[in-house]
Length: 184
Image (tube, rainbow, N blue to C red; front, side, top):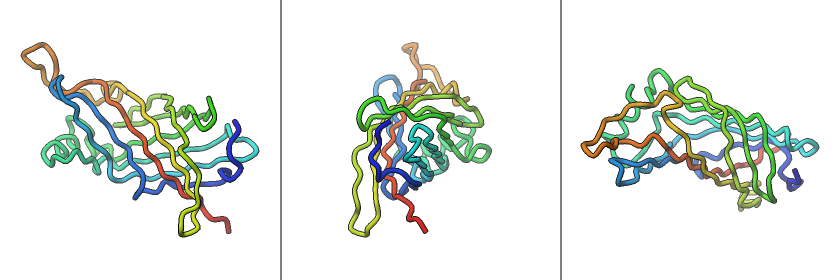
């Protein structure tokens, strides 16, 4: 992996400028989009061994926001996320591979509702900049489709047409702004 030398170090996810979103089909005809408003985590890159990067992302499942209070409450309940029992979605990396310049495959363990699956997420590094406050920032974007039933999120209701109310396939969307920790 040939990573910019300034990227070596430890970075924190900036929750105010990051988004973990999702989209799925509703009633087989429309997309429902949402996001989680509380995302934290860190990324550690070793300049001498960039493939040994360590990434951890934690999502507060109660922070789900689809711009519809009734739907958000249903998603927080036992039919979907069961946030009282399983308050967090967690991703912990096991490998990072650069597949093209500034394009990575991050592989790791995703845990939702106490079910862990090994997945790979393609991420693109959008840039590395110093903001007006002297903080180094890095931006990443990517998406990955998952089957929610594989994580124990299986509630649904059939439609007269033979379809279902909520699609099993959900696209997770990652828009991450990282801030480098200052040494010392």
